[in-house]
Length: 382
Image (cartoon, rainbow, N blue to C red):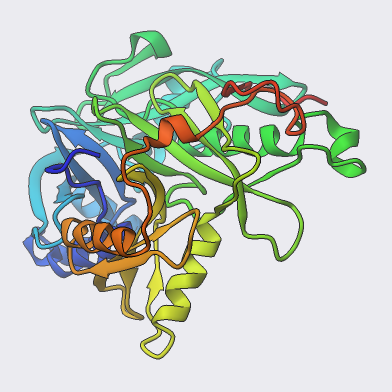
């Protein structure tokens, strides 16, 4: 990560709390409630988006449309939510033919919308659209491969279908997190088939459930492209060693599984959360949204720490290779500086790039001659 860059590190729980406290900006507040949160890139900025939804059927009857959505920076914890006024008629909380999923299914009755509901996406002009991923079953009704996305104008209800390679540029999450989570589960459990998952369990690995959206966490690369991150751990109880991690392109659905040097051991996300819980046991603070980063050439977990009321307290960074190396501060950049100091004190080399230290493989974990990343296939090997 470059020196002046700040990761999208505001946890969704904290963002949601701030939006709720700003709900007085919404006209006829008693009619509405806050909808689901998504992270997106809008005009080059990483922000959380949350629509305003109807609170019940009778409020929908009286109002007929919702008044807009909230945005909040995903990188600056001191930023305040902004309410954007724009009429939305076709929403998840509307009824009858104005309910967004029903509206989509009426327009495209032959498409398969099996994993994941609708998500709100905002274009760079601030115009809201609802999207839903469609695809195909892989084997019978097992597995799901995303093929495209249906885009709906939230005001007019105009719909259009796009294949994944033709999705408009403003859409970050064309593939739903639910579909990606299912794909990760099949890859981890059935990498060598169903019977191996039951008995031999060779190379079986379990995806983490610490993600912020359907057990995966959206992250952005240096180009601004969104990926879903998931780390994998051993099915054995009491083991908090990370076996590898997967990154899935949120626009194309292409997933790659990475694994480290077989002679090294990296702590998984659950282990990082346990360290934070022990560090702040008296205050009862807990970590949320752990993400693996390359900080100063070392695999490191960056985790926002929240109190029992959901308020952000600090940012905690811990080495995935050496849990003794850790630091925390009130902002990500301050935590990075403190972490660099902790690394120096521990005499950890800062000049060896993580990409050189990490060895990549393909196939079985005991085949040390194959070190390339594994491309995750959408189908279970049953």
